[in-house]
Image 1 (spheres, rainbow, N blue to C red):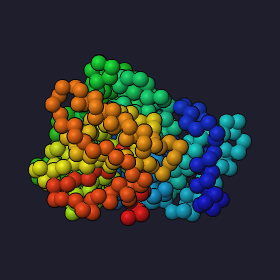
Image 2 (spheres, rainbow, N blue to C red):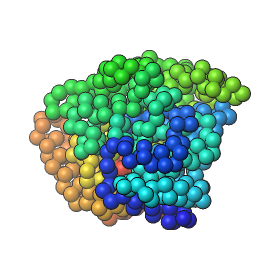
Image 3 (cartoon, rainbow, N blue to C red):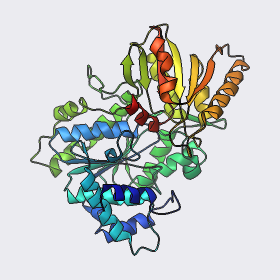
Image 4 (cartoon, rainbow, N blue to C red):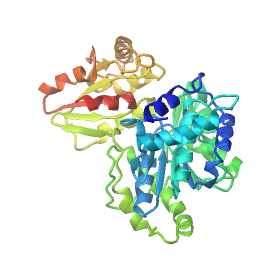
Length: 432
């Protein structure tokens, strides 16, 4: 297969969409010679912050001279970014070769792999073929039944903040979701748990971190809570947004936990705290509280669930670099299976306008008219709540992101435009 054929195969293989469970992926990997058994893996799960934690780890370990692989899906800017090695995306010919291996291995399987299973197997075969020293694997969704949950003895399992998302597959409460994500924990393996906020669901307060801690005890994992801040004084977080400090702290705890083990595994490399920090300082992770324009201020953020929306809101109101009397203009596109009403409840108060627009994926995307209508309803709900919150918010819709940002051309110095609602909208900025 060439690259176009390989891409088409992973996008269309299987016919049932998402199928939770690891039986098919394990059979497929067995037919490929079980490449996952030779890999040194840091496995990362969570609802929000996985990508940032993975980026910190990727840059830190690469700085030490290690050959570092990273697997994360879906892509945000470039299709090939989901499989990376040595801080570069897999090449088209490499992707085609790996997927061809998978297709050939899957030919005689009774149950065809899904696209995600096929691509996960291709990534693991690629990393083993390239003799990667360490790979960082981000769960696609959940944990226990995720196609990435195929490692018997990872170096560590890491848990970013847990909140409500993908309820159709993971559970109806924060507890069910946290238990599902804890499914990647392994006996005698570090389970590093981020500091994370409590989550309220149907009037009940949940502490996801404590739930994960209880799961670690039950599974015999080595539980490591990251409540203590170990970010060195004066260290400047290379990723912006106040919420990134917890992600950075989790990454540093992971590196601290693994440093001695890595020195034993790779005695010829320079692995020290200072070198790891030097790598962390170079981290890039576009699309998360990223200021892409100064005049006017335009911030893009992939927030697409209530937990991420709260983090984005807190980052905005704690950002001392923004105008003191800022007027926040929200520009939002979202998938219809997301809790967009709760996201609106979080983001609308304090803003002066919201512009809804259509995402390119017409099947999954929420129509702009429906999003604008929901915003009007939430605006009225807020007004009737007696909270005293200003509700003179202008609600409108636009045919595209480019149209939604037109008003920014004549903006005032205190205007701040926030584009959010889906990581998929990041690709739209390529047209600017």
